[in-house]
Amino acid sequence: MSDGRAVGVFDSGVGGLSILSEIHRQLRHESVVYLADQAWAPYGERSLDEVRARSIAIVDHLLGRGVKMVVVACNTASAAALHDLREVFPMIRFVGMEPAVKPAAEQSGRGVVGVLATRATFQGELYASVIDRHAGGVRVVERPGTGLVELIEAGRRNGPEVDGLLREHLAPMLAAGIDTLVLGCTHYPFIGDAIRRILGDSVRLIDPAPAVARQLGRVLACDDLAAGGDVAGHTTYLTTGDAEHFATQVGWLLGLTVTARTTSI
Image: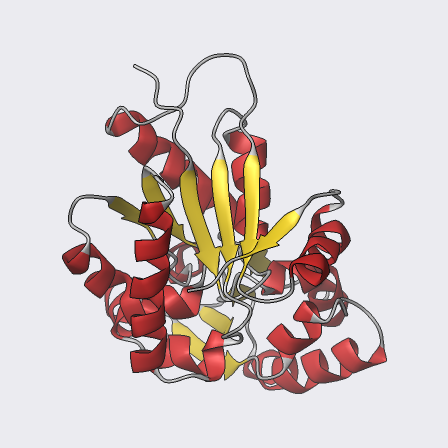
């Protein structure tokens, strides 16, 4: 069986492109509709109720475009809305994001793990559940990455402003002795090089994007939804913000020349 319908992927902005890049790499036959909700970005500073309502509206929009399943490529939206999305839309499968505390705890030598995420992610029930299930025996040092999403959305991945903000966020974690850092926002892999420079080689970074793409592949195969054939899939780029600017951001972050369209939700 082969299902040529697209997979829907959404985020508040460009962070989910880190997930999209892994989908392109691992699942090259799958077509994707990527939606960046930039009119409402960043989600991390909004209330959970706002993010939940917005996520439901976006999934409804994606279903109207005929997607076969949805990847919630945003830790904040997953924390706020993933449970509700599965209840509101029982006819479709979801793959969401959760901070990768489990592999971090397994790989930590000293038993001290850092989690860099948005405030809303830390406030969600999903994060609390992850800590309860997977953080036994390790100390978890949490830090909201305030200001980082805005810099990444503006195309700033390096430089004094990025380094200064990262040092402010990472210094307490280093002082606490972390040996593993979970990137708990899909935007953060785009500043992974800057984070590594500050942390040094003794701290391992956990980027969830490869694991999310693998999980998507497993669900597609299990549900007989995978695309077949030898033809590479295509990606449709949508934004609730400025389409030309979004296309430029895709070029910055993924090195692709694309055409984007603005959609209203």
